[in-house]
Image (cartoon, rainbow, N blue to C red; front, side, top):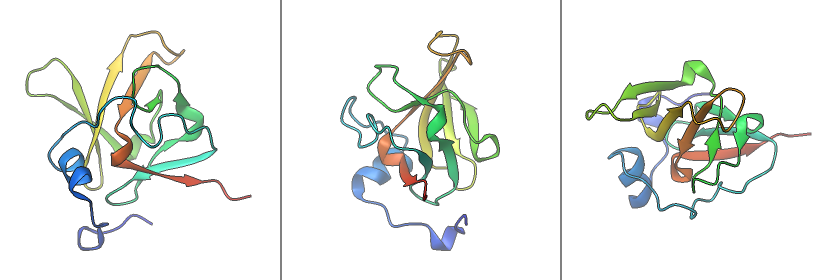
Length: 126
């Protein structure tokens, strides 16, 4: 269940820097960079489901990469400078990272470059 604004999870100072102030975690340091488990990645702030583990791939860019999102829960917003496209949680507006098109990493030709601090992993239950 997606949380309402008054029920959002408390954030650490680093999570606030990235999620609320559109920061970026250092490359190759994120908790989920090498995660290979099956499950769903949800917004760290409001727990909206954002990405399935089946969409995750290794792009060697330093951040978790996904070639598909849960469409209704991820919104694309052009950066002010017009050079990149930001991705945010549709429910709470939290900054996730950026999306890049046309790089050829996967058949879908899409790479969502996501900060690990912006997401939480929920493993599939068997």
